[in-house]
Length: 67
Image 1 (cartoon, rainbow, N blue to C red):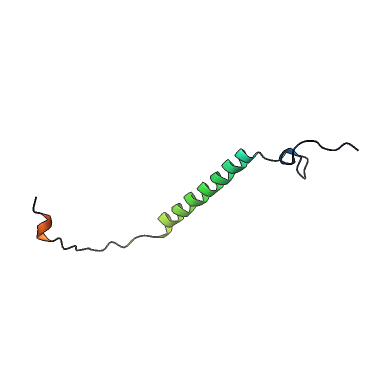
Image 2 (image 1 turned 90 degrees about the vertical axis):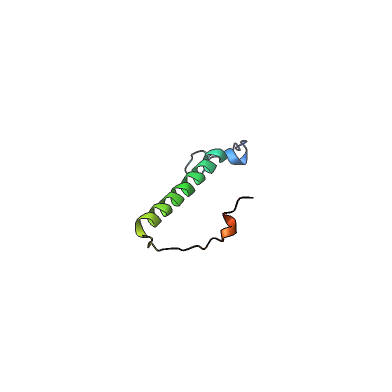
């Protein structure tokens, strides 16, 4: 029987296909995470409507004086 002399990261997977290289796997994970973040932001934009309200901030007069 002939043994596979390739490094463990390059051996065939269970379906006989080569394993995905680490750079492509990393980019795939980043793309999936970016898609999840984008989908979450899209859901927040479409499902939640902010209620406008009035805000009053008191600014002390000494802030207007130039030094």
